[in-house]
Image 1 (cartoon, one colour):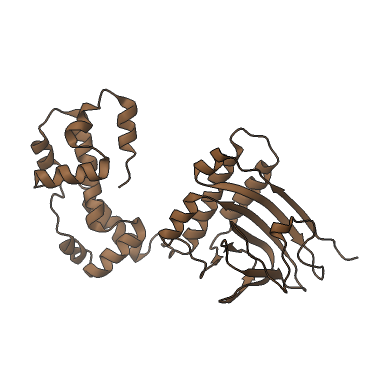
Image 2 (cartoon, rainbow, N blue to C red):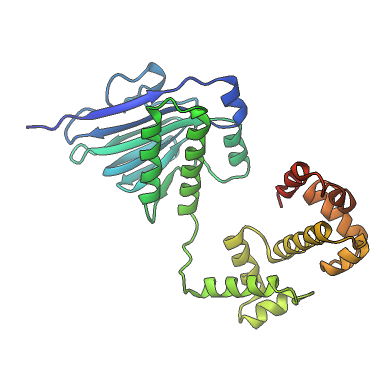
Length: 307
């Protein structure tokens, strides 16, 4: 007897508060498409209808994760084979179509979402409609997030949209992680980067020369700089500045040393440069930061400043 296909999905209203949050979820669902059965499943609202002949354009983002089976994804620019354990992102206003192989069928999980956060991620080129497919090294964390979304979708949890948005961001983070080179625990890259972080974090490192540091680790400076940024998100120079500013904030909290003394102790040799960089990264001058020590809420806000 031929196995029937099954589908479970939900659509969510979106309030102005949800939009202000920066990311809101519009739909969550799962479909198990049996071999040799029609695709797509019926009963979807018109805005989500899809057929292979005409394709579809959405007005939101969707992540589709394939946990079983195989199939095809196509845009006007390219075509991709999709295997179990892979996922793809559908971008708004981009024509696309996809379907499982007739012989295998597939199980698909999806979440639809949008918001200002997504525009920021696109501007920073974390994701592109030209590269929609993602191959997971370990799909278990992604599968767990989709399972959680499916479970939450049936609840009346307060601030449900914001909770769903958090899990959706985790999914996007997992997809991004899949595009980064894996770091072997005992590999050469891991050894070099860990050794350099230890050296730069040493309180006695002082003005360690970065090119000399690379040479001491038996790698070229260009390789060292590129690999360090690839692994940490910061160049060695930026990482060192981050450590120095963190030291400066600790001294400001715990002593009444002058700004010039703090500048010297934290590894800066130009007080104007130190003050300018501190204000740029923390949001206020060193003196103003110190004056907030007795106001924990405001200090905590500054501590969260992005480097």
